[in-house]
Length: 129
Image (cartoon, rainbow, N blue to C red; front, side, top):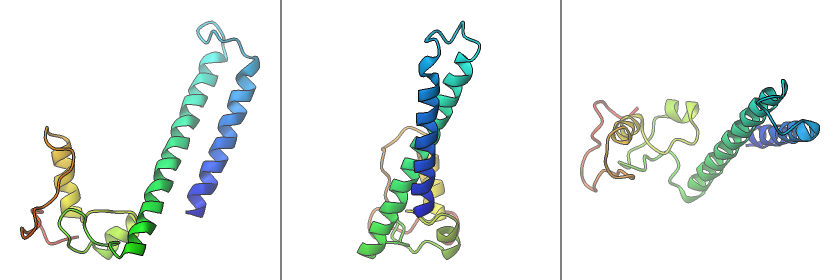
């Protein structure tokens, strides 16, 4: 989490520097040779800041699940999430099978939240990984 917070702080400083340096630039990006470059950099760093904020929030949420004892359990089927998946993605909320099923459901029309009804097995094609 320290790495993410540090990254967020660094990006915020970079974004502020871009904003300050463009303060003297003409507001007409179309006719200013540097305008499009400054606009692009501002958009790039803004997107990186937002990504770091989202990642930090996910990690904090994972710590909350650790405190409540639900960390490492799939939120869709309730089965254990494999140690390999948690090592690669410490804030994982679902086992690999449910994540794949959830992704397929996101790509097709349907409910925004998907859960396996209680008592039914995980619909994934293979044992939980």
